[in-house]
Amino acid sequence: MRPGPLNSILDVAGLTVGHAVDHRLASGVSVVIPDRPAVASVHVMGGAPGTRDTELLSPEETIERIDAIVLAGGSAYGLGAPSGVMAYMTEQGRGFRVGDVRVPIVPAAILFDLMNGGDKDWGRFPPYRNLGWTAAEDANREPFDCGSTGVGFGATTATLMGGLGTASIVLPSGHIVAAMVAVNAVGSATVGDGPHFWAAPFEIDGEFGGLGLPHPWPEDAATPRLKGAVPTSGAATTLAIVATDATLTKAQAKRLAVQAHDGFARALWPAHTPLDGDLVFTMATGDKPLDDPLADMVALGIAAVSVTARAIARGVHGASSKNWSKVPSWAERWAPEADADAASASAEPGVTPPPEPA
Image 1 (cartoon, rainbow, N blue to C red):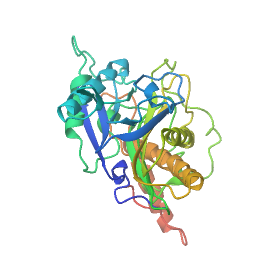
Image 2 (tube, helix red, strand yellow; image 1 turned 180 degrees about the vertical axis):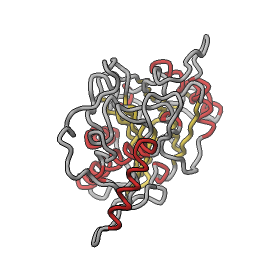
Image 3 (tube, helix red, strand yellow; image 1 turned 30 degrees about the vertical axis):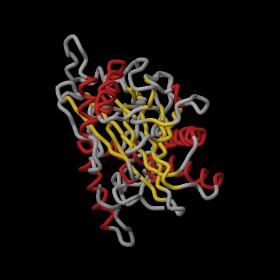
Image 4 (tube, one colour; image 1 turned 90 degrees about the vertical axis):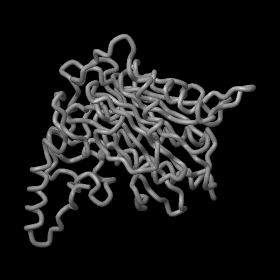
């Protein structure tokens, strides 16, 4: 299995992605908009979620398809962002028809970045509704950078800057599975106090540094690194959107969301704590029917784990340092040492150096 041409959620045909950032605020919004309404579901495993319109994604509920999914910073204030996306999509004539009106179906989830060092003195009204509009208006098929982009702009982890990551896989069946993940975890994406990513076994073509796993293994690798001396409820969250071009029912989309959470556990330590709002949205455009519903769902689920883990690592690896942040970026902290390790490896007979960082 190989990544799609962009190694991005945009490898799923029929999707557009938009971002908006407020640099002073140190926060942002990202949105995924399908060309036509897509089957969707969600699974929440964090203990402190902040969501909008997620209950309707349960398989037994009436609404079958959604018009967009929004990921926003700002904690509960960020739940205003989908209102901006709805306003934009209403002008485009999108939405679930109810009599003579249309109501865009825009589920959303938020992460907590209120204490990241940005200026949150926004006055009477939070800016997230406008950021949602801007992100929707920006939605396109152009590749976007992993790291400090959109909702990932103000994200942090226990030890490093967080960020927005994406990754994709093309299955032997021809189906594409991809993820876009905003990484703002209580825990850490790297092993112990070193540069190596927990997601290293899933890495493809050196997409987050090519360092592999550490050797020797750190004795304190299993000791959790946590955000803040006294972690605060709701002070984190990792949010994922897993998309596929497969034709799925809502129940199958729900199962895919459940399995994709394994990618969190393989890329973050710890994950799914009572302090995180961790969740996975799934979105199926329905362009490619399943040949064997059971076997294909197994393959889709495995791919969902892989792309989610890789997207988490790519989001942290690609983040840039900020003068307001209390933690460094991966590049600021580790890039010089990683380059030295690569040079040392290339000098050893019979040793193939890791690929250059993407």
